[in-house]
Length: 278
Length: 255
Ligand SMILES: Nc1ncnc2c1ncn2[C@@H]1O[C@H](COP(=O)(O)OP(=O)(O)O)[C@@H](O)[C@H]1O
Ligand SMILES: [Mg+2]
Image (cartoon, rainbow over all chains, first blue to last red; front, top):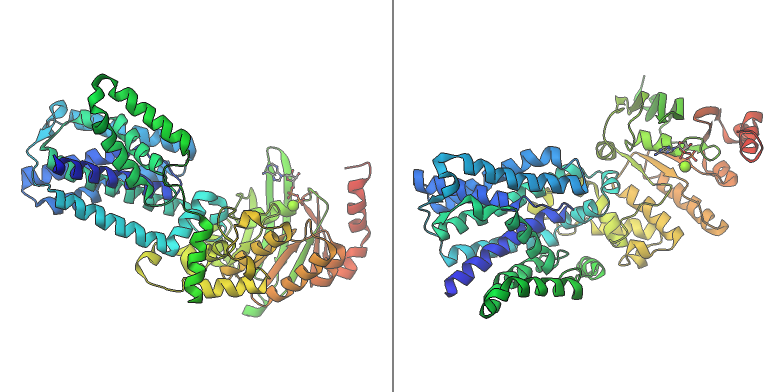
């Protein structure tokens, strides 16, 4: 069904961007599957049990996940590299465990009754997030993020607070993942904790990384291709996971920086330069 | 005490050691408003560690740092930068994968201290004019679009100073800015530093080139083995026996 493709590709694009936003400040997050789960459940409870309108519930869920992201991120972002990554893995694992233990939302059985997501919700969401990220890429903030990603110490001696920058990006990524999770749940009608395991988080990271993370168009391309490839290789049935794996490996070999890793920094700066001259 | 008489930086009994190795042993000194203070001493004397502790890169093990009369001893480096203490590194530390212009733009004060504000408040120029003016002054304007990592050594040193000035600092630390430069480049650099001096209240410069230091510094402090061993006007200090000995000593047999 066309509608299915639009919704799933769109939601995966927003998820890929949620990882991209965090990567902008140089941290890799495997927590976004967990934030997505928070979004799905918080918004689900709000709409099903309290009759809150979907869009409002999705925003509230996003804010809740963003707040949790900031709380978790504050101690975690002071650590670096592998430790931060492990903490984000821990977030996804714990969110799933916590949801499983709450009977109010159905425990392992999952939680149902969420309806209302249309493809237009998803299209609008993708458009809004895309515009936001495009504005960011044209603002001085992009350079601050580039600096933090390249050398935190150097950035700090220029007056940039790297922890603050990374924390805000982490919270924004959590927000986006949760909003995507909200619309996802209200399309599927029923969700269960199993859907939000660590594999999902890994996949979301793959969407972004495969597409390329040095400009904002890479993650949506990666998300779209990775969402649709399994459909195209469906005929092969038992070979599907293998074919899928081979395609991913092939992509990584051919374009190790991602499919869309073309943004030359020099060209970007020339843009600024020319604007000034004009 | 009136404002003009108050030193911009007052360091009292600063100590720092690394696992038993004492890099700073109770160093006290003042940086006065309007001056260029030269900091000399043989390799390993503790000059870079001194700058690193003052600018918040390393925590100190004791002592007090007052900047503009305010205790700034335990503040992190980004706060010190926002308060107006800028620096360059002995091992050049540019954002190599960003362009020359971007390196300066990143340091523009309003952006660095309020990074997320720029998303909502439209400031079309984004500081480009100010950044280009700085690059002009440091003879780097024609290289604005080059990646910083591709600059020649002398150019990279100049860019680091330009970038440090982009944050409109009051106090500027330069750690061996002429290292690896030839004589002509060094002379040009000295001229640029004099120009930069008009933009800041005080400069502390670490350098080995005696001629350059004699020409640039209003006062000279000499360090050896983590201690201040001399202080005063350059001509006097450079002829002091213990200073001469400290320099000769590093080539000689004893430590
Ligand atoms: N990060 C560090 N860890 C351990 N020892 C250090 C560190 N930085 C400097 N030192 C030591 O402190 C002493 C002073 O070094 P430094 O300040 O770099 O000397 P210089 O006066 O040449 O700039 C040296 O013995 C050096 O080996
Ligand atoms: Mg040194």
